[in-house]
Length: 229
Length: 335
Image: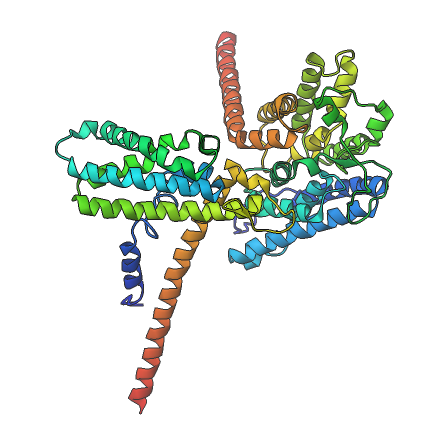
């Protein structure tokens, strides 16, 4: 059957406009920055701190990569930019410290290893070829995608794992799945989230194709009816 | 000669999923009788809840995945999983915990890997491990046997720790050999009746449902470990007795370790698999934070199953090559 794909193509185009968030999401689509999504998403507070630190270190570093593209040899890219991110993380750590009483206990070294996270390393090469504005947009979209996944995971894990949201008790009674606070639960939930998003996308395409086929069929029947008249 | 143009497989075996699961079901029913005898009607209700939760989870997953033709529970595997899980739980566990453990076992540990027979981890072991992590104190507090339990557990029910918890804390369990053998000690409701479990093992061995390699290697390694490093310092024999028969070690050796899906295919691989499981179990018991480590050990060796298969295959290949070379040289010498 010859399809013009009037619905599928605009949908695919619209998805690509949100590249980094719903299309090629760094965590669920590309599998980048997984340690943070798995370990640091046990509470909303931890997730928010990591998201803020990621915003303040990742976006400027990508803009820097774009601005200094030709001034730094390509071989040094992977040393220079993580070093820049590491320098940025010193004031960021001081900035986010008031957000959590036990920052060291809750996040351990995960705040520091943001400087060498796989999302940053992966994004250096594409950002180096962009203008600073485009690099900033690219980095912001990827950060939004990362934050969305982190906060979703943290919401579910904190709510079911300890019955609280941002430390405030929400679920009445003693229903707790304390196992969700452990990293293995983060892996499992992330896996399920990936599967869910893939299934949702596949079903969306199927639905659109189904609607399109039905429309074609309707049009054919109407044309046949008109020709009979 | 008459040819029949049929689809493969062309070689059939009398055993089927259904017959294997049926054998396991018969043995678990025996353990339920003992659980009912020791803890009353609540133990049966826990079993029923677990089986229903496992079956519903399987059906839910199949419906969600659009595999409506596979919704029927003809292979009985969710029923067996439910029964094994419930027998590993204390009779005083809340029903909500049983449902969540069973849902985890089916929806997380089994269903995402595909159909029955394609799972990487033993679903029952995964469910119990999840239960231990989530409800640690309730999972290791057991009611006294021979006391019928009310449906809703309140403060009037006295919960105690089992002998393996006592060993973990450095104490000496105050139970006699006969009490341990007959299961008249606090513990998981189906895992303390050593005599019945041994009878189940013999039945399954005679039926050919399980092979001797895994349980034998597992128990042998545990025995040697307990003998060499006794936790009851004055008596090595007593230490071995309590290590083997006090927790869910024997139950795990019979019902979890022998899962045909998650164990290696060749004999040497099975022996290595059992030995590794035993060694990790004892390490988990001695140095882990929980008094029972069999479920965690089984999950760990499940992930190494392919390695054992590859290694055993290499050994067999080497043996075959040596035999061929020997025959070749021997033949030449004769000529």
